[in-house]
Image 1 (cartoon, rainbow, N blue to C red):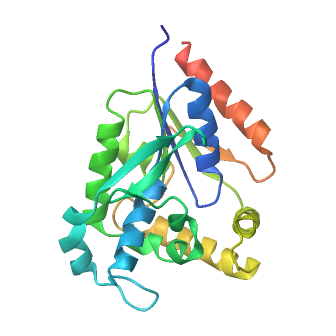
Image 2 (cartoon, rainbow, N blue to C red; image 1 turned 90 degrees about the horizontal axis):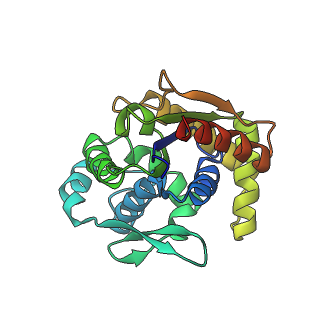
Length: 230
């Protein structure tokens, strides 16, 4: 029986981390965890409780309410991946919209939020055989992951991908709005004091600006296969 490894995929927003991670987990028979969905779910909760909006953010109230936030993933056989549940409600679709995207980076700056979610993430990966994507997986959550990837692409390329994705969902958005949000999130994620987005020293830098999904998957799958078979 081949040994199981931990695969950590970090990178900027809209680089296709989740898409690749899902494919990789399915191919390897591993568990897939989208940590971004967890931060998005906390953001949705904060929005529902009037803790955060475009103009204000009551950090103390969010911290006081953290124990009331229950997060878990449930596998959907039809989709082939696990969906995000917030307090036992499926919020997979709600957390993907622009309203959440605009605020999630602010939520992710709160140390108490990160501490809660990192603890959950570490428990999920204690037995290995996991593909986890996010912003600090290789630098904080799984520092000893056997395979670490840092995915990047130009802001314009990422904004174009995100724009098409949201249009396909039926959202009413503009490319300019998406590009501005991508650049804003890059800045917040990279400059926050607690676990800023950065490439782990032993991570493979993976620029997919000019790659299709098939090429990306084949290259990354080969990285994983090589390590597993060593």
